[in-house]
Length: 345
Image 1 (cartoon, rainbow, N blue to C red):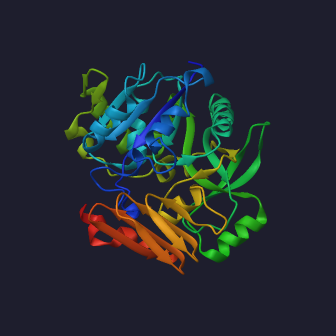
Image 2: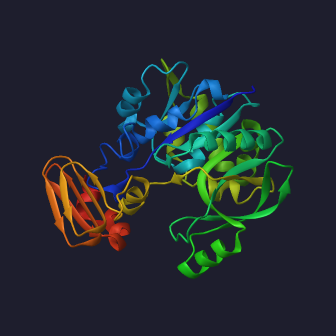
């Protein structure tokens, strides 16, 4: 196969964007930036005319209705319905075992914002070219600021003209280390987007996490098809210890590479990240819904109904969703997921 197969991962509950994002309808299925939902935008970034095959969507039964409604009648698209959430290594392995051995997969989270679609396609093609040479490839997002909420990739020696070896995977750093990474220039954010040939990924998974590989293979072998849906066997899948693809494979393989990607990327991981991704006025304010701001700076207001008035505040987030209201400082956004409302809704 010469096409790139997008494998779109739809999991998680998006609790840090509560109350807009809720367990029943998390952030991939919401129009948070622009008119399309994050999931719809992810699918749209991988069109056939740019060299992409029909997408494979991996999701859970709780999100299946949202996936099918927003995927529409996309030609050739298929959906793998996970019996349980077991993190990204197992989710990607499910898709891999349903594809030809020589297919190149592009594993994409469904809840990220990418403002420059052309740059994404260029990076995907570069990653696919390296994958066809046997590399397991990460997107290295240009680190424009010292973010402590992201993992980092340290760039090694060049691999031809398309990318670099991944010399090191670095866990989320403290602020001092993050600042040193940006100053160094040889580090990139780990955007959680990967490209590899099916046979290469499955071989590495079998070497480094044989139990996951064996359980997924059994779940696929005993699974059943239902139209464009595929249901892996729940009993075989239940025994898997969930682990991210980073820990299970990417940090262990000797064939890890990275391609640089400067594509206006955000993981929309919290309300402050969403604020940064949305258009803002000269004072850094962003408003969605009815609101009036007076003498405010760097304020985000997002209301689905009531008019919100804010005076004389800076670095504040105000969200109204139905009968729930969230008010937080910009520094407090990482704690939103700890609210009881976020955990239970």
